[in-house]
Length: 209
Image 1: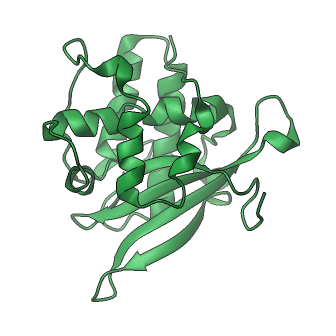
Image 2: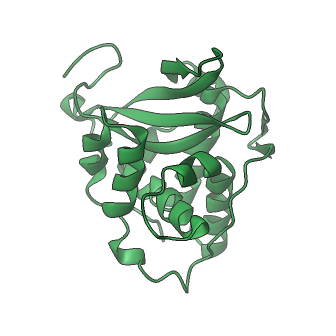
């Protein structure tokens, strides 16, 4: 009963664009099947401290820790065998979203909660093809998660960053490796997730195509 998606690499076009464009693409490219939300649990996402998989995600948590928990939740979402398991995994993903920052990028007339729902709900289908390569232990994941493109505000405070991870294709084809990008923002003092996708220009971190 997984939420596997098609067009895994379609979000790669968002790389190199502004975070605004990336979020809009998450809606435009994935929402056609979710125009009606009556049968879905539309959460009112808030940014707050949370603990999942033994990791406390407070204002001291790093982007890499947030990314690790996100990917574990997505893996659980994709492999869920029941609606309840899926909803539990989605609850974690909504705990990790940069709700206020995402809403600030809302170019639509959608109400706040529906817009954020449509962004977060499509995270798992975006990367579902590669979930078998998501680590479930922090010690292993931390060695693979690479922080990049840290930006600061006028006072030098961290504002946005990317977390990168190389992923192997389930087929084992080395030419099908990808670099996943998780765009993050500092929201209410917490590192939280804006969007995720792929870098189409390279197959390994530090190297182009």
